[in-house]
Amino acid sequence: MEKNKKLVIAGAGELAMIAYEYFTYDSAYEVCGFAVERDYIESATLYDLPIVPLEDVKQQFPPDEFEVFVAIPASQLNRLRTRLYQSVKEKGYTCATYISSRAFVWRNAEIGENCFIFENNTVQPFVKIGNNVILWSGNHIGHRSVIEDNCFISSHVVVSGYCTIGESCFLGVNSTLNDHVTVARDCIVASGSLVSKDLKEPERIYYGSPAKELPKKSSLSVKL
Image (cartoon, rainbow, N blue to C red; front, top):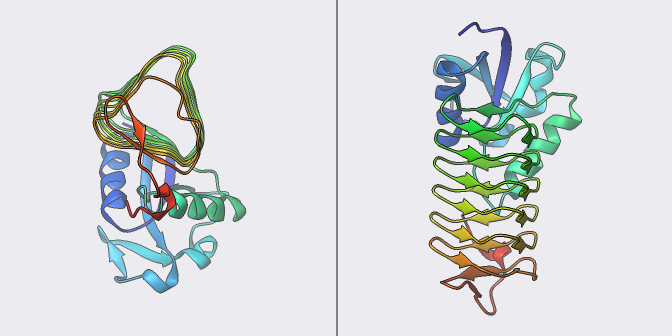
């Protein structure tokens, strides 16, 4: 595959290394370096590429020549990834989206920037996926469903048709959402949960089959 785009990865942890693999071997992007906030830099290089302070990234990788992918997982219920995404946007960067060549994405699905869609995802017609969304491997996103900005969908999640997943949600492994379900913003749906009706309260943790609210605990208090 011809490498006709240049990329900087924001981050240097496990997801950054995974992103490097996928962008390098399954995209038109050439990864040219990494950017990390100055206080968290632990090494000068990764994969023999420079790690530069995010605060100074424009000096070495100007926005008119390089795109950025923010490779941060669901830390702090997606808050860290969201903050860094907003930071690089303020610096004038276009953020890259990766879609695996082994994912099925229908032609009229809308996918935002700084998204990462792993292998074996199925994204059906008329789906809308916002900015800064991660779909780990093997999920089903049903027709007409909407996944709003800054969400993290882990593996083997089924989102049926006409669903809406609110901003900054986390859906755990093997969770299932029936048709026409809405999940409020900032919610955690625990692994293996079955959501058969709207989850209306934001900043909540839902678990079980059928899913119910975990009392007296905010989703914002969970370290993912």
